Image (cartoon, rainbow, N blue to C red):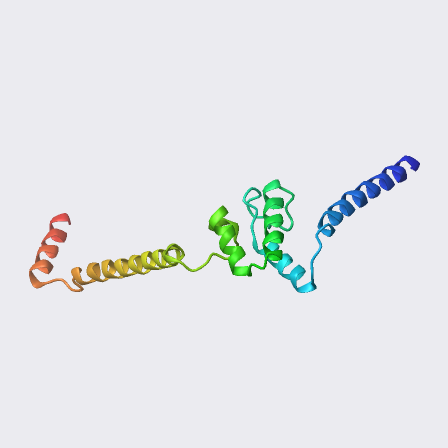
Length: 156
């Protein structure tokens, strides 16, 4: 039982060291004012890590995420606006780097084409069902009734 407590204490110590190391890495950055820090954090959460697929840059330890965070920090201190930093990152890493794609011809088509295909398919389905209903007579003509009667009598 004593070895279990020792193992548990060791695990807690390792987790504390790992957690404090990650926290200390974020604390190395110095900002001129609190507004600049808030902009940095907001931008870090808006950018997606190109390597980690669906993890933001703020939470990723990948080298490319570190580069993006460093470049963001550098551009903020040079006086760039948030939109200028976003545009720079898009130019450098493509539109994949941001979670909210900007409105463009490509993104508009991503919304219009599926809607157009859905409406076209529903219209085609509606026309096909109407045309088959109109082609089927509801009652038999006198000639068809006589022929049917003759067929039934022949079978009996």
